[in-house]
Amino acid sequence: MENLDKQNQIQIELGEDVAQGTYSNLAIISHSTSEFIIDFIRIVPGIPKAKVKSRIILTPEHAKRLLFALKENIDKFENANGPIRMGGDPGGFLPPIGGIGQA
Image (cartoon, rainbow, N blue to C red):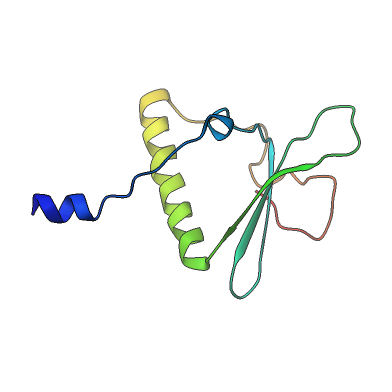
């Protein structure tokens, strides 16, 4: 069984450039019949234009796995640190653009 576990392990490499991360304070989510697209954006106060910093394209199955993984991690975080507080209605924020999904 131990050999089987070793064969099924994936080695993941995190390069120094990616390890630093990219800050995002807005995610726009859209989808087609075959994929979900998540654009991560950084909005800076006083700057009327914002650039997409990263785009992730997922299959519907992987998008659902991401949903479950985020839920599990948020639950663990809140159990350890208390509830995450959001100002106002959590569904009430709309970015200053129209016709696109949001997160």
